[in-house]
Image 1 (tube, helix red, strand yellow):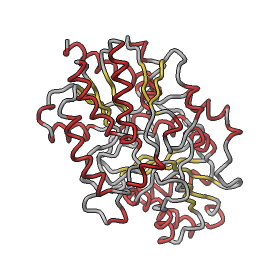
Image 2 (spheres, one colour; image 1 turned 180 degrees about the vertical axis):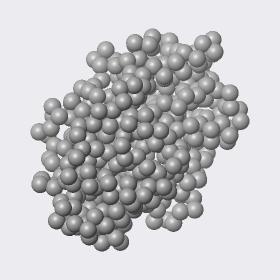
Image 3 (cartoon, one colour; image 1 turned 45 degrees about the vertical axis):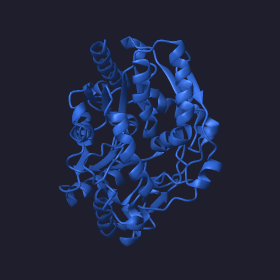
Image 4 (spheres, one colour; image 1 turned 90 degrees about the horizontal axis):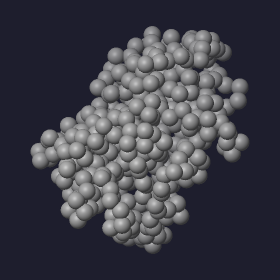
Length: 408
C-alpha cells in the first residue's frame, strides 16, 4: 500500500493515470490511520470493495484479508474493466493471494499485469525453524502459498521488487518468466509524511522516556534480527560497566514488533535483553501503532536503530523515513543486504554488517550519542534525489511503458 500511496502524486508526471481499488476500512482489522488520506491527491479515483466478515470466517480459521476480499475484488474490477479501458493492472501489496486474479483478468480482458514483490510470497525460510519462530498458521500459509504463487507468477508480465534476490528466485523457480521485464525499486523517501505526522502530533501519546537518550526501532521483530541486535546490546553492556553514570540514561525502544492483534503479540527482542541482563534498558511494545504515530516517534527519538534480518534478501525497505528525520542512525545488516549500499550512498556514518562490526565501532557510536556529538545529519544530496518518491515513481513508469509497448 505504501509504495502506491507515495507514487500517486507523481504518476501523471510520467504519463500514467492511476485508479485504486482497495478494501473498505470497516472490513479490515489492521491498524487504520485516516491521516494517510491527506497524502492521496484528490484527483485520484479510489474504489472500495467489501470482504467477508472476520467474526464469521475466523471460526473456520480464515482471517486473511486477501482471502476474505478475493471474490469482491473479482466482481468489482470485472465491472470496472467492462466500462473502461485500462492499459495495465498493478498489484502492489503483501496480501499476495489477490494477485491470482491477474491471470484471470489477463485472459478475460487482455490486460497485462505487474506484481510488486515487497516480500517473498512462497518461501522456505521458516520451514526448518522451530515452531516457536514460525509465523502464526505457518503450516496452512505455506501450503496455500505454494499452490497460489504459480497461478499468478507464471502469467505475469512484469515484476517490481525491493530485492534483486526476490526476482532472481522467482525467475529461477518459473523459467517461463525469465525474460519478462523486471525492476528492483526500493520504497521512496516521501518527505510530506513527516510533516503530516508533526502537524497532527497532538493525537498521539508519547512512547519515549523524557529525560533519557531514547534509541528507537519501529518495525517487526523476530529472532532473525538477533544477529544484528546482539552486538549492539553487548557493546552497550561494556559502556555501562565502563561509565555507568554516563551511559545509564540510554534507553532502547522496539515498537510494533508483532503482527498479532494488540495484546496478543509475543515479545521477541526483550528475551534477548533479559538474556544479557539489560531488561531495565529495553522496552518492547509488540502492538502495532499507526503509521504517523510511528513517524512522530522516530522524530522524537535521540537516535534510531535499524537492525536487519539474517535473511540476506531482507532489504528493510522502510529505511527512508529514518533517514528523513535527520537523526543519528545505527544500522546493522546481513552483509548481502541491499540496504548497506543505499545507506552508504546517503553517507550514513554508522552502517555495518553483523559479521564484521567491531566492538570499537559500536563503542564510538555510544560515545557520540552520550556526548550529544551528533549534529543534524546532512546527507548526500545526489542520494537524496536518487531515492526520492518521485524518482521511484519514474522507475515504475519506465517499467510500465516497457510492458505496455511490448504487449501491443
